[in-house]
Length: 232
Image (cartoon, rainbow, N blue to C red; front, top):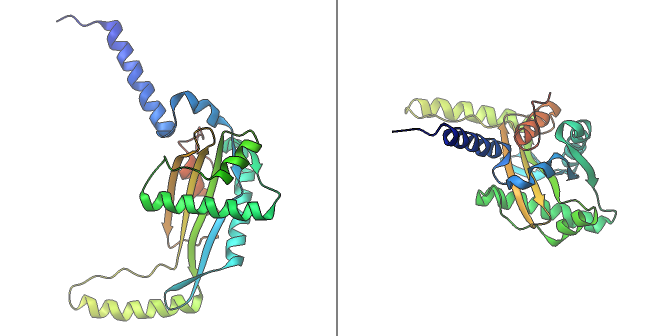
């Protein structure tokens, strides 16, 4: 059987192109990849909890605000590496509060439904993007918790006692997490009115206010979207 070398090379090239487009972001149409070279971005949203009694977390405004400050400073310091454009920040405080709420809802809904793309964005998100003539925009939502020192000491003591008891019956038991850090990363498309990319990065036993941890989580979420190389 004769093999057409020209057709074989053409098929190989097409296959390589498909794979490369997938690695850049399987949820974005290939003819739009160039537009992801520069995207607008929203101010990060953060919902952090502190556990002081038992195992119940309470949203802590101070921790959440500090998280927003850290995340924002990371994005600003790496705008060039992340190929970020302008910050999309409404001047109206009521619009900003609604925007933050809707962005966080989209993040948690994407996580709950295990959808990497396809959810419709709200009219508020869409209008803010269109007002800035921005088709694509990045949003980051941070979640997690930290235990007070007293609470974690009690948890460790309780876990130690239970572990001894369980081991005598050949059972195992996971130690309680001292803290967790979760970063939800979303990219919105104002033209299609959808979430085109959603990624989640979760790390246990790491403080949610550790700048190095947060920076690594963002890098890992964006590395194959519009970052062309590893970022320190």
